[in-house]
Structure formats: C-alpha cells, structure tokens
Image (tube, rainbow, N blue to C red; front, side, top):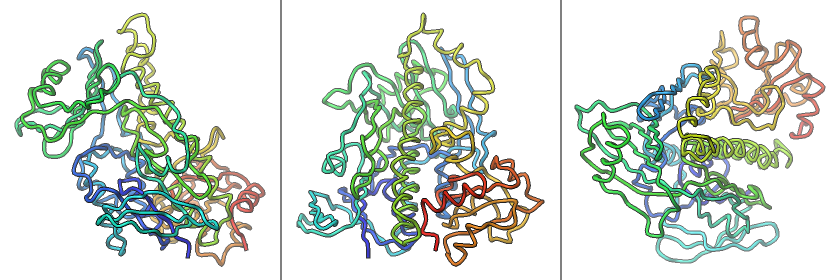
Length: 494
C-alpha cells in the first residue's frame, strides 16, 4: 500500500489529511510541536475556504464557532472611502469567518480523530534518503528517540521555515518588504462599540481592525524597516497608543491576550512538486497579510493536491492529473502574490504618487470593480487555476440550488462534496461517461429544464459539458470531442 507522510499539522496539513482520509488513503501526519498552537495566528477564513470545509461536512461547525464578517471598510484620515460588501458573492456563504487558528485546527483534527487518525505530535523530520523510489525518513519522536520509516510521498505543510523545502533543495524566491508589522489580540469591555472589520490609513501607515468573538479584536499595525533580530512583542499600552492614533473613537482595550511581530513577505518556492515531494501552504508561498490570503490559499493547495493524489493512487487517473497540481497551483498562487503585492504597495504608500492623498481616492473610484470584483477577490474566488481561458474552466463552481435531488445533490456544493467527478450537460447522453459508467468516481448529471439557469452560470451552451472536480473547481467546459480528449489525457477510461 502506498504511504504518505504529511509534515505539519496546521490548518493546511490537517486539511490535506482530511481530504486524503475522505478516500481512505493511508498517511501519517506529524508535527514538531507537542501541542496544537494556543495563539490565534491566522484569523480570517474566506468564503472559498468555508466551501472547502463544506466538502468535509464541517462548514456548519466552522460558521457556528466563528464571527461572521459581512463587510470590510477602509478609511483614509478617518474618512471612509471603501466598502467591500460580500452580498454580491456567487456563494451561499456571503461572509468571511473570523475565528482563531487553534479553533480552526481543532475542528479538522477532531474530524481526523473520529476516523481513527491521530496527529503524531512532538515528532520531527530530521532527514531522508531515497531508495528504490521510496523515501527512508529519519524521524525524532516525542521521547527523543530516532527511528526511520518508509514513504512513497512526502507533503511539506511545515510553514515558512520548511524543513521539507530545505531538504528537497528548493529555493524560496522573492523578497521581504522594507517594513514589518506588529499584531495583537486584545479584548474590549462589553459596553464598547467595536468597529467592524476595518482598515485605518494615514500618511504614516495603517492599522487593521479585525473583530473576533467575545469582544476580542486582532490589531495589525505597519512599522517601517526590517523586522529587528530581537522580535518586538508589543504591550497593551503600545497597542492602545496606536488605536488612539488611528481610530480614537474606539477607546482603549482593557486586556492583552497575545502579541507578536513579523515581516511582510512576497515569496514563492521555485517548485511545488519535485520527484515525490509536494509543498503546500506557507512552505510553498508567503504573502503580505493584507487581505488575509495566506492560510486560505494554502487550504486551496491542500484540496487540489489531496483529491488528485487519491485518484492517482487508486488507479482512477494517470500521472498527468497529479502533475496538474504543479501548474494549476502555480497559476493561482502567482495571481494572489501579484494581487497582495499591489494592495500592500497601495495601503503602505509604496506605489509612487505625487502626493499621499492621491494614493486612495482616484484608485477607488471604479464602483463596479469595488462592488463586484474586489469582494470576489478577497473571498478567494478570483484566483483561477488557468492562465486565461475566457470560460469557467479553473474557477470555483458557482452556488446553484437544484429543483430536485434525484442525483442525491441539493446544490452544486453537494455535487463536489460527493468526492466524485460530476459531468454536467443539458444533453441526455455523454459518450465519455458510457465508457466509465462502471466507475464509482464519475457521475453524469443531465441538467433538467427546470435548472437551465445552471447552464448560464456554467457559461456553456446546450450542446456542451462542464466537469466539476472534487475540490469544487470546474476542470473543463466545452464540446463532446474536446471532453473525450480531456478525459483521455487525465484518466484511465476503461
């Protein structure tokens, strides 16, 4: 039996494990820390990531535990110039969730434990050698005992200082900005009128205000210069001074729960798939925190890789499907990298303008863009897997509720959650499906007259097909001859 080693049990590593487990794929998951993190760290869960939780039947738990964020506001010199409203999203989740990272991790880890899979904590990867196509991994367990184990694949979900990336000899290209940020989780009194999720900007920098449950708020503040070697740990007085400087109407926080500091990054690994080594999450890419794209993009890495690896190991697909992890995730990640770089330059005043005031108002005058495209981007729905096709290929499937559930699906999210490839068409037959009809991994869904609006949402004609993958992305749209070529190149049809 093929065996996989996942290094790192943060949200990305756990999500990878959960989606592999969905297909009963054997794996070990280890983390060098003896306990799950107790700090909030990554906070914002995007609608696209809630969709990923939906695929595991965990979205309701996530939404229930978190704080819903329906809108984001931005102020320049205390004058509001931007409102990002999620009500226009093509999803049933028209909000972000603000939830501390430990709680996100706990939902995923509990899900694994219920299936009999436990994270091996206090376990560290030391090195590996490759022998006859297998990786002989040298590991250090929680008792300090060195042992070895054989694996066919290794997945590096071990963060910014990834041991997997280092051992694989993969370069981490990019740069750190000439600035850093301090952050803190603070608590306000119950009678305080806490602002909604907001960016407060002036000519000196910015402060980000991210509410959480229980009157908790994440504060992020830009500081000039590289991060000092002695990493700053701000205290409550310092945080309150910044709050009064940027948004004095809020008042002071009365409790500091956690604080830290970090660099602003713009980095991407030169490879995400080398031999049988994969990189996901922060081991693969590091973004500026503007827009909260880091963990959310990593989770999209995880589900893209997991279902493809599962299909390959089960003999459903050929190697070319697995190899698409390389190209598709590079395409999507580079889009996020460029987008966050631009937004960071804009909010931090790095983009040259004749005056500081000119940075904002002219940039934010396009109402249609900021009403529709910007919410779509920050929701995680605009980083497509294809460079440019002019179709829905490579995009998240739009939310659509079916008039009946004769296929066992109430909506398009139920369809991808089945863990199968779903072929949609208004045509009553599909020759490709006839070849594969004995397979449990493919479904042909004939779109009834009552659901013809779905054809428009998928941007296909009545004689065309759309293929929905188990990660919730559309893998193909087009005519039958092209569909046959598509399946022939990726799947073992007989």
